[in-house]
Length: 120
Length: 111
Image (cartoon, rainbow over all chains, first blue to last red; front, side):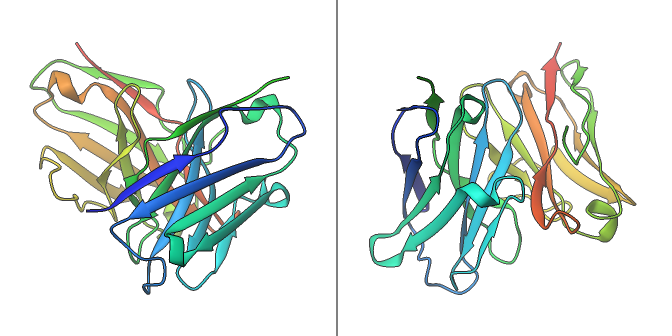
């Protein structure tokens, strides 16, 4: 049974760096074909893909946010960590981590999401 | 403005069939990249409905189906039920952006 759970601050100030952790179970990020992604959703708006990390440590980032994002994995802890620098109020939203279905870019298991508010 | 265009809303009566379109371009759907569909009930995380054209994960009813033609894809829901009222998103990959892309979402209302 695959589960994922996001954790991190609920409130950050503008210009600060956001660090989100996704703790998962039911799969290993060292297994060939496995990937984990981050997707966010501003209140009342559409989903936006942020980043994807693969079992071989290959990383892909949204071009519009690439300069602000860093994605790392800790296979021994079954965790991935996303950092986003220079936070702005427009970055307010629910941040989800999700398991990539092998050999596709579909996300078949999602965390419950964590709401991050950017405000001074 | 999303790379994949979906109608903001669709509606249908219980038992009817509805379709939700997802229009892309030659750098995403038209280039042959897979299209996936998600259902998001209010206040919950998205749920994978259809992956790689028309494959359904375990537990998804066969009332849901996907298709693709040219630069567009569609999600069809038959035998509409009240529980189908949700937001629906399409997803693909765009080679010119080198990015996973989502549609703007469609709100389905069951009348």
